[in-house]
Length: 210
Image 1 (cartoon, rainbow, N blue to C red):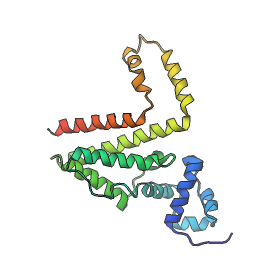
Image 2 (cartoon, rainbow, N blue to C red):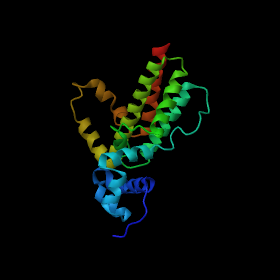
Image 3 (cartoon, rainbow, N blue to C red):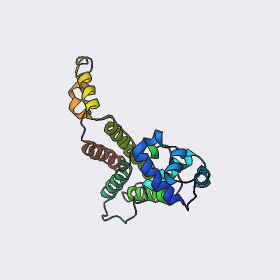
Image 4 (cartoon, one colour):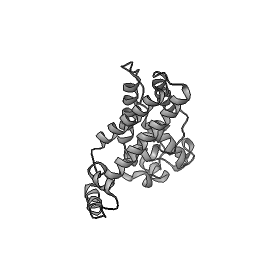
C-alpha cells in the first residue's frame, strides 16, 4: 500500500465520514486506515487506540462551538445560544452525542466551551461553584437530548409508532398521570422538547440564586 502524507485533521475528517456510514460500532481503526489508503501503523502514530481516536473526534466535532463572543448581555440568552450551538454540533454527525459522552478531553475546544458557559452563569451573579455545577448540568442535558434524538432517528418513525401503540394498551388505571401525559411523552418535536427542557433548567437556576 502506497503511503501518503497524513495528519490528525485529515484523519479526523475521514473518521467523521466513516462514522456517518458505519456508526460508532462500525468505526474501527482498520476501516479508517483503509479509507485513508494508509498503513495501520501510520494511523497508530497519531492515535494509539480507538479510545484516543474517539476523543479526537469528540474534540473535532465541537471545534466551531463558542468561537464568537456573545451578542447579548443576558446570561440566559448566552447560555441558550451556547447549548444550542453544542447541540447542533453533535447532531450534525451520526452518533455524535454517543461519541462525545464519556470523553474527558482537555483541549482548547473543550475548555473554551466550558469557560464560555461558566462565564455566562457567573454573569447572573452566581458564585463560581454554582456556575460550574450549572454548566455540567446543561452539558449533561444537551448530551441526553441528543442521544435520545439520534436513537429515535436511527430507529425510525415506525418503531416509535409501534411503541406508542403498546403504551396505549397499558393499564390506564395503574398509571393515570403517565397516560394523561402520553402526547408529551411521545412528542417527536425534539426542538421544542429541547427548548422547553432548557428553559426549565435555567428557570430553576434563576430561582436557586435569587
